[in-house]
Image 1 (cartoon, rainbow, N blue to C red):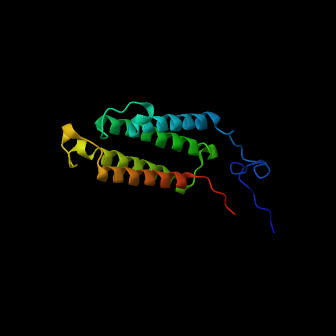
Image 2: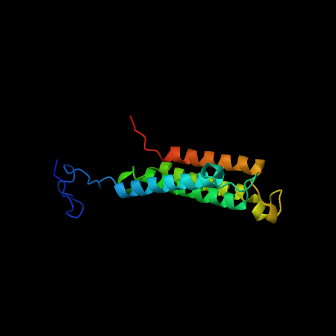
Image 3: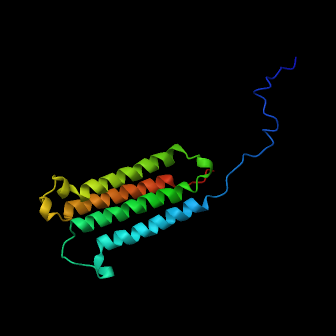
Length: 160
């Protein structure tokens, strides 16, 4: 057989023997994500259980507490996504991890709209008397469960 001529543009010398370059572990992104996650959890606790910090002013969870809870939950979601992205080096994530990101965002949107259903006008209480009722609480828990499923989809797994 006759040797084939290789095009010099497509030849990559030593590409078989060289290992792919990997960036070091992104410590800053992981630390930022964990900081956002912990800060968001504390803010979420202030909104959900203000009596822990001796800030309780009423019997029901009102509009301001709902906003504080959603702010904390948003920071938890954002921090968790940043932290889990830090474990995928070189920005190469599988399709499942990208679906997990979108699932987390969808869960947060569900939490946002179910918690603020009264404020948007499709809840049982009109705007001046907004509070977190039983249906809104159930919607908030469903949304948090979906966020948790998204986090599980973003975890790095080991292939065998």
